[in-house]
Image 1 (cartoon, rainbow, N blue to C red):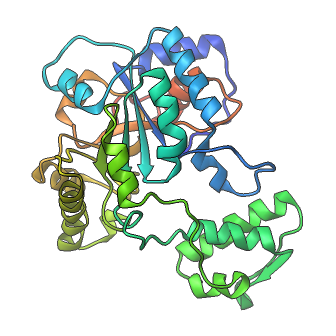
Image 2 (cartoon, rainbow, N blue to C red; image 1 turned 135 degrees about the horizontal axis):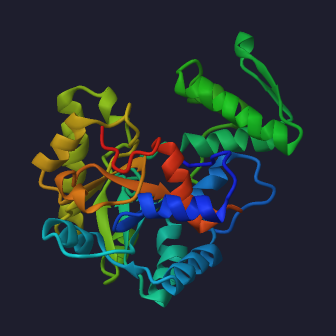
Length: 328
């Protein structure tokens, strides 16, 4: 979830928010590192930050005295109650190819550790990137109709954005399916966006990179029966460990809001031996999170005009309704 509060940046408000919400560490959530497309006609662009922007953020954080560390190191800080402040961990979800080709060079050049949570269907070649098929639909058409469900004009960037969101809602509510989308764009094509297993292995060999698990097929875990939820997590871990010949000890819930991952999921990841698991609940990490290692918060980093202070502190303050630690 991205935070775009209506509250404007104010230095005094920001200082108060920082003092109250900064904790000891910030775990940033990203997906892709790639050049943004202009004009931005779909929300898919929010999945990206450009390489230059990522390098700028790292430089800014370093100048402000932040320390970059791996999830293993953050886990050690929490478990052993080590004194710490202004720590930063970078995480990237899913397993996009640009994590290797675009993100790795930035992290390598700056000496910053990072985590990539791999959804196994990406390197297995079975991922259904429906959100990019939906983008193709709004890009290629001036209008689209789904029978009595609605007809949408798609002529301007604003109409395309709105049409994407309206059609996305129909898809998520299962009122339309992929066949309905493909009727307007043709069969699915390989987008080239996903890493192969060879590329995941190449990334895993880099000393700054950590590979984490992200389920087999990226479902909403809370919507699944117990055995299916267990298998999504356990089989992902097992296959990654087998292919990479190393332990996989960190996990990210594919959908990590309250209604999408809860205590059952937190317990499952703990039972399966993960050191940490991260949600998409906004927030910074406090020393008290050592009791909630499989329910750690993250902050969505996206390329925008907001200040970094606002993203890290003020937006979090409002999103969590002044609560410092949000787990359930």
